[in-house]
Amino acid sequence: MKKVFSLLIIVLIFFTITGCKNQDNSQINTETSALPMEISQEDWANAKQFVDLATGIKMAYVEMGDPNGEIVILQHGMTDNSRSWSFVAPFFAKAGYHVYLPDLRGMGLSDAPDGFYSPVTYATDLEAFFDAMNIDKAILVGHSLGSFTVQSFSIMFPERCNKIVLVSSVPMNGYQNDMLVNVYESYISSLGDDEHLSDHFIDVWYATDLHDDAYADEFDTFIANMKAEAQILSKKAWKNIFLGLASINLSDLYTQVDYSIPVLLLHGSDDPMTIGKYQTELREIFNIDDNSYIEYEGIGHNIQFEIPTTCANDILTWLASGSGSK
Image 1 (cartoon, rainbow, N blue to C red):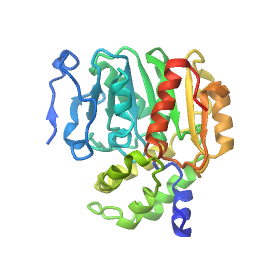
Image 2: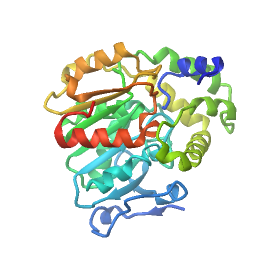
Image 3: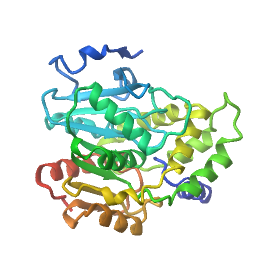
């Protein structure tokens, strides 16, 4: 990120980071056998299960924790997959939550059909996931693009939200649209149908620093997998993700926010994509007070894998008390 070229691409990008067993839908959530509390980076992809949704896609997901616990759904960012939350998920599992980590449409091992994928599309998939898994209500945690899914879901289906957590988020008022289209035109549109983005692009896309010594031994494996799993996505998937996000503007729908849903907002001070004025605006939209806003000094866009322990503990503290630790 310190190189000039990297900074230019990151500012242009804006909002980046942003073997599996099939399961019969009739059997979902009916077994009480133990779920994993931890999953290694080596085993993460093979831990994914699949479910057919009413929206017409097969969605991949990871399930962890106490099957009888309160449900938490962790949503990843643009071109990521459930692995994005793999450092944080065990904290929720060990705290007694029932944790689901879906791969959003077009990403990870979920289906990637034709058509642009907007946050409303992802939110509609999420509602279908609730129905398929027999989930009534849940706590929703979303990072970057995943936070847009959570915002959209909370407006579309407020009755299904217990609490929501927005990580590295901004209002969906079209601020990112020009940059998303420019990145698509500059780096993606010229690819052949069977070509993939360059190693250099992916290195810049996932340029991030670990600030948690507890994960030093795992981080290289983690980030290598994140890069490989994003790079393997098709040109069509990248197009549908980028242009789908560029097609959304919820400024008029923010009048429909349900203020009875508690909201926590996490922000990194060094995140060039979610600058302070956007945080102020987002806090006003969702009526987020000082007890439910945490800014991390010197941290960038990928809070959940830059400072996993702090991120997890702060969210868990807020879920328990309604107040952050900072």
